[in-house]
Length: 104
Length: 290
Image 1 (tube, rainbow over the protein chains, first blue to last red):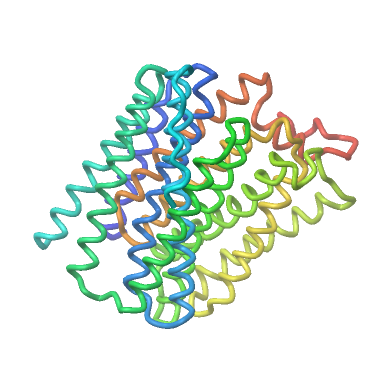
Image 2 (cartoon, one colour; image 1 turned 90 degrees about the vertical axis):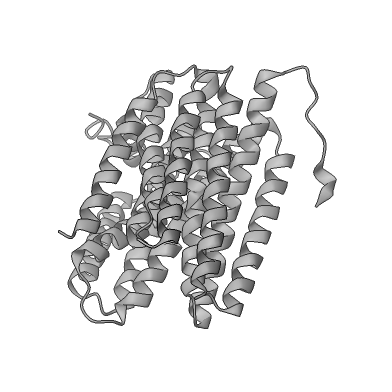
C-alpha cells in the first residue's frame, strides 16, 4: 500500500469516527434541517467538479465536466439556501422571511 | 509540497474543521443556524482555494473554463431559485433532489477519472476500487433519490410499487454490479465495464426505492444522503483530495446515525423499512426483516 493511499484511508476512517461521535441524540424537529445541512456539506463535491474541468480536453470530457459542475452547484448552493431558510423560520417564527426572489 | 499545495491543504483542513463544528452546532435549535453558516463559510473557503489552485496550475483550457462557469452558474441559479421558492412542506423532496445531484456529481467525477486513465497502462486496485465504489454508490443514490423525490412530490405513486419477479430482478442487478466491479478491477482498459456498472447501479437505485411506501420516504432520503456522503468520500480518493474524503465520511457517518434516529422516531428499524419494502407483495416479507 502506498503512503498516499494509507494517509487517505486513515483520514477516511478517522472522519467516519468523528461523524459517528458528533451526532448525538437530536430533537426530532431538528432532524430534517440536519439532514438538509448534511446534504449541503457533501456539496463539497463541487471541488471535484473544478478538478475534472481543469483536466478536460475533449468534447466527451467537457460534457462530463459540465454535468459535474451543474450537479454539484445545485447541491451546494441549493442545500445551504434551503437549510438556512428552514432554520431561519425555526428560530424566529414571527419574523417574515425576506422576499428577494426577483433578483435573478 | 510546493507552497501552493501547502496553503491549499491547510485551507482544506480549516474548511473541514468548519464542517465538523458546524454539524456540532446544528444539534441544538439555538445554535443550528450559526452551525449551518459556519459550514457554509468552510465551503466558501474550499471553493476559493480550488479556484486559486486551478488558475495557478494553468492546465485548464478556455473551453474548460466556459463549461465550468456555465455549469456552475446554471446550477447555482437553479438550486437557489428552487430553495427560495419551495413551500416548507415540500422541503424533504427538494433535499432529496439536491441529494440526487450530489450523488450524480460524485459519480461523474469517478466516470471522468476512470475514462481518462483507463486508456493508460495497467491500473492498480488502489485506484480502481475507490472509482468503482464512487460510481456504483453515486449511481444508486442518483436514481434512488430521484424516485424518492418523485414519491414525496406525488409524481411517482407513493404506495409501494412491486411487480412479479422483482426479487429475481434485484438479484440479477446485484450480480451485474458485482461482475462489473470485478471487471473494472481486473480489466481496467475497457470503459464499457464501468458503463455496465453505472447502468446496473442506476437500476438498483430504482428497484431499491420503488417498493418503499411514501410514509417511510424521509428515512430513505436520509439513508441515501449518507450514501452520497460515502460516494463523495470515494471521489476524494479518486482525485486525491482530502477535503472531499473528510466531508464525505463525516456526512456518511453522521447521516447514518441520523437515519437510525429518524427510523427510531417512527418506531421502525431501517432494516425493516428496506427489507419490508423489498418483500412487499410476497408472502414471507418478515423473513429478511431481522
